[in-house]
Amino acid sequence: MAGTSGSTRRGAEQRILTTAATLFSQYGYNGVSTREIAAAADVNEVTIYRHFPRKRDLYLAVLSAELQRVHLRGELLAQVADAQSGRAALASTFELISSMLNQQPQLLRLLGYSVLELSADLDPLLRKHLGELVEVVAHYLQPWIDRGELRCANAKTLVLTLTAIVLSRGPLRRVFAGEDAELAALFETYSEFCLERA
Image 1 (cartoon, rainbow, N blue to C red):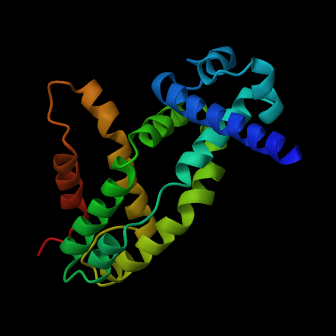
Image 2 (cartoon, rainbow, N blue to C red; image 1 turned 135 degrees about the vertical axis):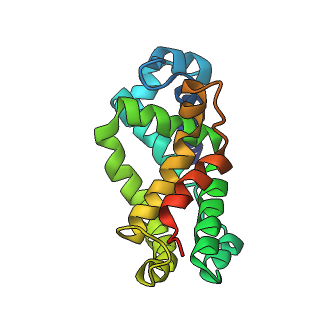
Image 3 (cartoon, rainbow, N blue to C red; image 1 turned 120 degrees about the vertical axis):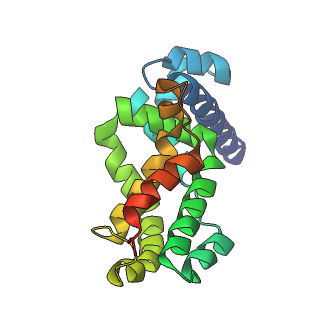
């Protein structure tokens, strides 16, 4: 009987997380209530608070679960490692970051809302889940910076800037609706600043 109760409890918690992820990614932290999440997850609001004492705890659990799904694609990391020039390393790094984040549009929207609504809680969560990924990618870019082919203070800054370009694409497109805010165009513009001119 205890096993059934435990699996029912985990089932309700997973349903709450899945539903909350969908609603938070559509409306943001401030745009949806726990009552609305409970109704959509087919649980009562007390059940949410049994699993997550505060709405903020639920939001952070959703974000943490989505961030855990981010993984480096080995073949793209190999392209960065095997690059023959700083330009090729930069392009491969951007492709790696772009593919990694664009496979999860819900995560991109959650991160966008998080920056605006919960920035203090976001930093430790990003360090925990993405810190190692940044370190690994930066490790492959650092030699190009050391050789002077990429102009940047350090490789981590470069990786974070490329990540910011991917994350800002949606908001930039909305702000400059008549302008070309395609991801490749944004990268090309930024890469001109990074590449050492001969």
